[in-house]
Length: 414
Ligand SMILES: *Cc1c(COP(=O)(O)O)cnc(C)c1O
Image (cartoon, rainbow, N blue to C red; front, side, top):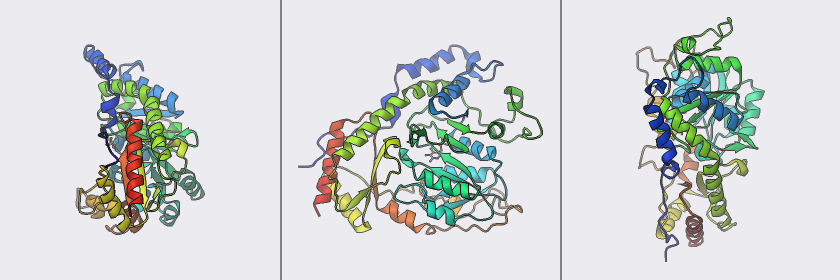
């Protein structure tokens, strides 16, 4: 008899966490349409409150609510004055937006391998540093912090800025501190798929006062007019670029969701712990995804890495017999998953909207980065051997016990 006896409620976290409070927050604004613009002189907009509340919760110094996680990442890079001529190291496994944000500010993304954390491999980061490298962006995929300490050491040693893409790691901590807070800048996404959501939205965070002002400039060319406290002291010259101003209705929903965040991750963390506690401690065919700081894991996913590609195939078949449908993260014949660099066609082919070929052909760029679909073989190999499932607070302990039983049975069957 199959181990999975109860249907597993796979759903996005918001389908579990949304209630009347979000609906009320939006309708309240719609009844007062004059409140739909965030800049009204006094700093009492939903966006202003969201920014204060997220700093209070995370310990971050500065936050700006923007239109998406991608735009938040562009703000991070603008904040650190990254532009033409600069290389930025990004993981080969992250959403394409991480690399796109580098291109957006005129920089060149350089890809580094991942390791068994499914995050950046520190040794490969060090190998990818050139005289043009200015920053490293570390992504914590699916709520699991990577080897942040080791990557930070390398960045420090080589005088590089550290940026964290925390779009999938809202609520995750690293040795007790919210992911991102100890880096120069970091980004959250509040899109539909994330741990907390307002439909679409993002938050740009920075540590340094002046860096934050630069990121604010990136977000809205009229901020000089709207926002108080913008510097024009010759150090930060307000510049004009993009328009990432976000919707007040989204901010209102984001505030409600932020209040629920700790409760959501407490639940997902407990579920994941229960799953792991029920696994055979000495499996034959796989290892758990390596967690550098298990306590800080947000618990929104669970992953195993099988010992070989062959064993992965057999595990997938055996798990299906137990009623658990999982595919390897890298399924070359299936869906072109834009979290895997080999599917970033626009970047692999250095596609530029104009014949000038920016950013790769920018006269300021002296490097010679090359891309190819097989340039990060270790990343593809690890993803090919990785099986993962998403955890949401609507799941139960019984679901976790049955998933563990399915994995134990499949692992013991060959
Ligand atoms: C979702 C996501 C983004 C981009 O967020 P959007 O809000 O969709 O722009 C960036 N990086 C990672 C790792 C993500 O998962």
